[in-house]
Amino acid sequence: MNDAWVKVEDISFSYGDKKALQGVSFDIKKGDLFCVVGPNGGGKSTTFKILSTLLSPSTGFVEFWGERGDRSLRNIRSRLGVVFQSPALDKKLSVEENLFYHGRLYGLSGAPLREKTRALLERFNLADRAQEKVEKLSGGLKRRVEIAKSLLTDPHLLILDEPTTGLDPVARKEMWDYLNVLRKQTGLTIIFTTHLMDEAETSQRTLFLDQGRVLVSGTPSELRARLGGDVIARSEERRVGKECRSR
Ligand code: ADP
Ligand code: MG
Figure 1 (tube, rainbow, N blue to C red):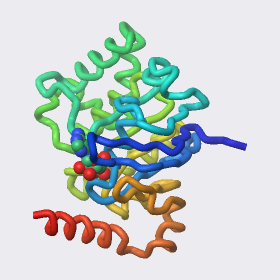
Figure 2: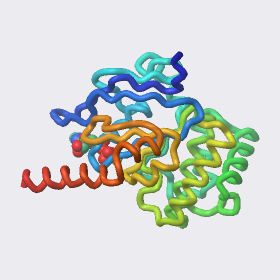
Figure 3: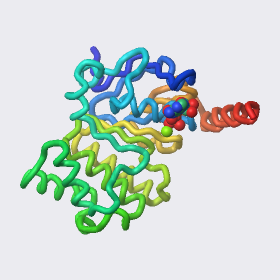
Figure 4: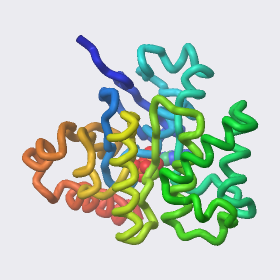
């Protein structure tokens, strides 16, 4: 039986001559918090862009809840919540306005939009910041606003590229608490990328990407058992070595 909510089948992608992904396959189960971990240049953001349908794989395919990404792009897109690594908020607008404008873009309006915005701001403990301009918020709060925004459309899948990069340890921990509570309370399926092995521990399943290939995948404890703690250090050493040689 294939119970994959999202199925990634043998995808490859190149930027010109540069091979960013080579034959990557994995399944995400409904309701899982799924982690893609790996060093810089491993292919995490490319995977993120393919999952969010911004890039099409040069070979292979992605299937979302049984629909092929290359066939019903519009349907699928409207069911994705996407959080980019760099902020995609309007800094000059308030928290609430950012959500209102995003909601309107997706066809929400009036009382339903106001009610949804209110509920999401409450869920992310942002209700008392609703009128504040986004530029005044800390990095951690901005991320929370982005996630709240991405959930306005009731996505089937939330995709986040390095959601904790640039956050201090307290904001990082808060982010994981929010994502875990969200998953447990709503059953939402979430995939995120990180370059930090310890963040993989918060997930149900992890895929380790190195130089565009899957090095290993499994539960966090399976990964630990198979890799030991030093795998990121080793692949990072290899990358730095390569950079030094090419100078
Ligand atoms: P990660 O997010 O894990 O750091 P990326 O998916 O961004 O990895 O990058 C994978 C590989 O593709 C890297 O070698 C990177 O240099 C290369 N790459 C990424 N984006 C581009 C681009 N726009 N043009 C050329 N090469 C790129
Ligand atoms: Mg990246």
